[in-house]
Amino acid sequence: MQEIRLYSDGSSRGNPGPGGYGTVLQFTDSRGEVHEREYSEGFADTTNNRMELMGVIRGFEELKKPCRVRVVTDSQYVVKAFNEGWLKNWMAHGWKGSDKKPVKNIDLWQRLADAMEGHEYSFEWVKGHAGHPENERCDALATAAADSVG
Image 1: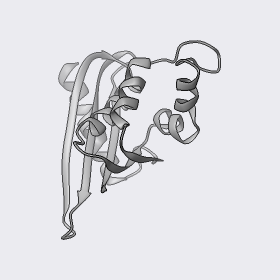
Image 2: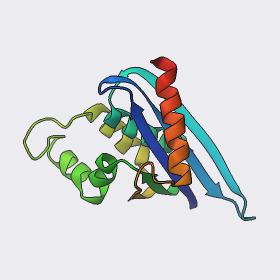
Image 3: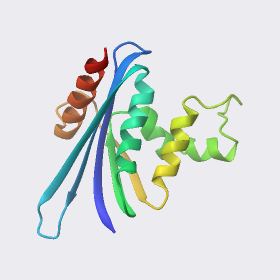
Image 4: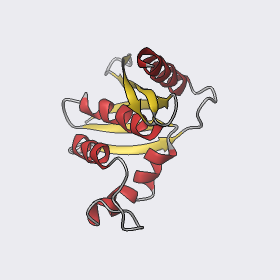
């Protein structure tokens, strides 16, 4: 199974407001060469959390065969949904949170759950704006995308 590193960040100029995401996919081939692809897109009216989700979704949707994916993001919203079991609980309870209200951004959480099917994955949080090279690159892609529609 191919190992992939999926780096992602989201940005919003206002919340809601113009926003964008940036995603970097990396893998190392059998010769030890690192290959990288970048993706970004801007939206005229969105939120930061939606863009954080879209970055991860885009990365998974680009994968054409089952992979082992390490997701690295500065979004605690995304990381905690997996590492603290929020997503499994939401799914088990009909997409309702502990407050019995519908989960925010349900359309994107469902899209992400679908995109992740067949893959093995882990989620890792990194501090944003702290010099992590791929996170900084994703931030640059996300803010440029947000600015392109703002």
